[in-house]
Image (cartoon, rainbow, N blue to C red; front, top):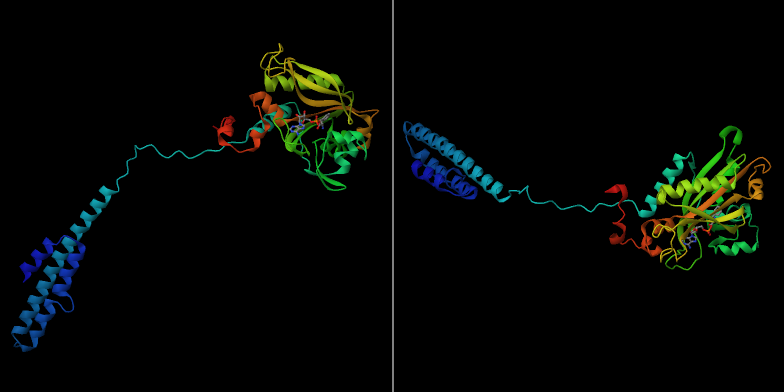
Length: 341
Ligand code: FA5
């Protein structure tokens, strides 16, 4: 029986078959159990001989079984490894990488520029009071110039700020010239106007406010600062032009134009044949604005400016429609990866 059993073991091709052979021979109802049943009919001399033979069989059977089981397991593992082989030379799946939005990039570029000139970056609230947004900017209630900025009101005294200029008043009120020295700050952020959306207007957009207050600050300081800013952002060969304008919070007020980046001033379709493109509003801070924020206008003077970030980005990258910035179309956004490549 032993030879037959061991042949069966060695011929079996799976762990399942092997287990069936084990049950058949040494299982509870197996052949060995059958043989042991004859034990009681044997003589006292024969019984130990049979017992010994059965133990011998069991030992040899188990040894053969274990050895074959190990072989089958090794085979199964080898087959599994072969079928699951990974080809590491296959190109991997490229994960989609995001980058900062173009408006954020422009904002950070402008912030870096002004930080380099010694300015602080200060943020203000987007939900603002009528007092900071208008009154402290020299626009009392019912002043006709309020119509220049159509407004989202929350209640009579609360609104979504229409420009970043209220941060001027907030900063001036807190500023202590004795302790802090000259005031030099920029303030980037979201602003809101009840404007109809078109290619150059959005009801929500971004501005950067700039404010410098100290003794003897003049329009010449404004011009020098903005020339440096424009040349750093648009190129060394850019020039600026100041045009008279009106803002209730600056006197005099000026619109600032930059020489056209496409034609260099000769006139083309981008600058509408004028050679110049408008980029921001600015001026010398109105003495009443200084006084309303607790600054003595007989001793101190200042300049301020406010530029639209979308407009700057449109000019810098020749983008024809402001709505591209907000539509989250990756075909547009992925063209401006900046330092995020
Ligand atoms: C102002 O908002 C003034 N607070 C700027 C200022 C600050 C003047 C300090 C003097 C001193 P204005 O309404 O012109 O000004 O807006 C400034 C810039 O915001 C514009 O030049 C333009 O670039 C941008 N802008 C205005 N309205 C929109 C709009 N609806 N969508 C996109 N950009 C706009």
